[in-house]
Image 1 (cartoon, rainbow, N blue to C red):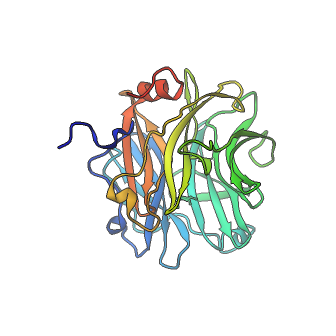
Image 2: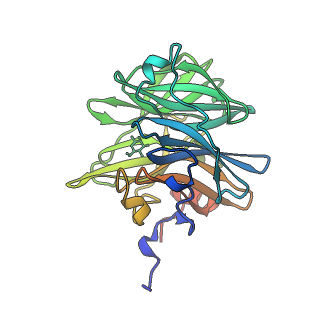
Length: 314
Ligand code: BMA
């Protein structure tokens, strides 16, 4: 055993990772990606992105009593639309769901993928088994759409990731009704010197803290053997989420374990949701190497301090 904890990432991996692997899926499919969690009445519901053998993605549901040990339901819960206005834009699958609770209602923003590119789509669920599609809320070239859990100054707010000038940056948009979006503003860009130099995007629905909106995002660095996806944090102004209060310079999780390094896309940790627990911890759910679903935890106050620049990592 070495003297120091391997890698010293701020997030601590659950020793039982991966929590969902291919052999835990009761139906035939190709691989498991990321998942977005909701804890309701003591049950953890995890909506997971699964890629089928044909090569396009859809969503399955896993349930747990403790947030670590999950059972996957026998059939997928949401597949690409086959009829109606969404069908044309979901021909290549539905990807990267993020659930946000607003006033007791559960909304899912996900990526609708087709030959025309990636669009942000919005659906709603009451029971996590049935999903009602509401609207396609962006044109192609945009993904990583994520709703804030409450209205700010009377308006719904979302983060998203349009590709402009060939670079993926994070933007903020506003809406009075969840359907019509506008007032879009650039929030943040990749940083040339750092781990998020190639492209960035929102990952986890923003969490309201006493220091601002905590956003857990993904950053990519391009290397000679391909991209490396890491997880980092930024704190946004509570009243004006187009303003950055603090952006941490170090990531909180980098791919190191075999289940993050080896898979359909190696060197990927990609979060789509988190649960803040009553005991001052946070569970962050993430996909490893586009092949394993994993969870990592840390002290919640510790994360808020780090994200707001109150403490430096040791
Ligand atoms: C992103 C998303 C993620 C995936 C990542 C790495 O664009 O599709 O689901 O983990 O790429 O392949």
